[in-house]
Length: 402
Image: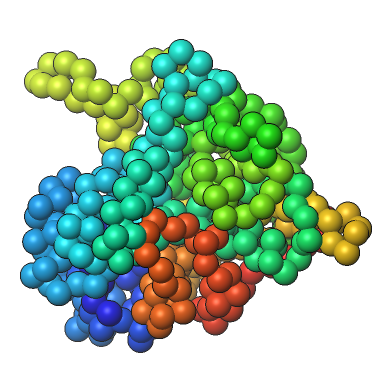
């Protein structure tokens, strides 16, 4: 397998560090709009650079990406950029006749009149609309295969297959006790993506209603996270799992809630009140600029925060239903300690936890364990090999009876 990795930021760099320890692929072409970032990612591998090449590519230029796929004889494109570039890369892979994998799906657009009640364009709609073309081409597009979405979806499928006879609710719950020394506000993941997820109307799925929206930060609940993280208030946030899981897993309700914290939520609300979450360009002295890009430029790069971070992050899937006629409630989870990920891989916990999952998926595809044609989420495929590899990679998952 020859892999084209587009995006050499925090997650992309972590992908190279995890993949370098595995033998399932022949070569990985590491690319970025900023060539120096791709070169730095490859140089940091020290001793295994022979299987990696650093090149420049513009993710928004689909024709250039397709040409690079052909030139480098790649078999699959891995998208580690932010969601703005999903469709250009998704289409470039199809045009080049190769498989595709991403960690975040095509962007949503709120309903013009009833944003907090009805869905407009949903996350991933732009990709699922093209599913027929992927099926006809016999190519596989694995979408939303990071940690959330991704591992959380694998947990949902595993619960349905092995832990429950009937499922009442699947609720993805994400929380952490991470702190960043010297920073009052320093998101551990892309602020561009964080703003998009948190300020858009969250989507909920119910069997009798289908997909619908609520107000941002709705339905707060306190969830007790494992391994010393403890109770964290979680709120509804727009996320791909709610759009993916109901397509392949039977349940009466699907939700996603994120432990943001009151201060973080207030900061996001302030950005929105000031219009600093906008993506359209505004005129300023010297030219035009996107307010959200300005916010991102003013904050520290999440990939650079590892040495200042302390604590753990937890991603998991809470499932409620019945087994053998008796009520059951479980939480399947994956915890990463920042000090461990920094020591072992030189990557902070949040980006490392995101990056390990696409590497596992690549290994399953390379070995023919995961296969298919069309646009598929992780929950469409066999969960057990994925979870077994997660343990083999040295990062075990857990199951807690609630």
